[in-house]
Image 1: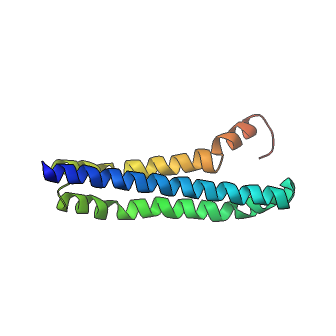
Image 2: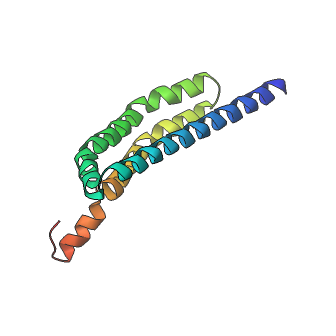
Image 3: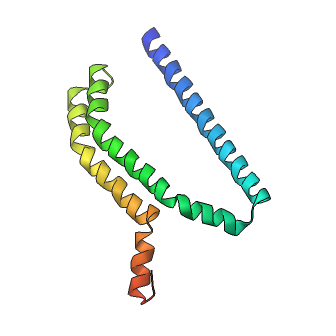
Length: 127
């Protein structure tokens, strides 16, 4: 019972720390954006965001590739540590490419605005 309790405490601690990190990053980004709006015009900020879009796209694609490449290692590590059994590890390995495919679809639809571009083409407008 003590092992389960310490594992639960460890999970809660990690959840709290990750939530705190997400809050701090969000607060920091909000501060940076607020400062940018105060010191620059909106059109200058939009130009900076537009110039950084390829960088952000590259980062997202790199993270998707990282998920695809690290998936077997993470799955095998979880199995070795006893967090998942053999059947769950096999299922997770089988789901790897399905998850990566969905991440790419989400990137195309949301990140690259593929749906908006297709609708604009269908209406006869320019993309």
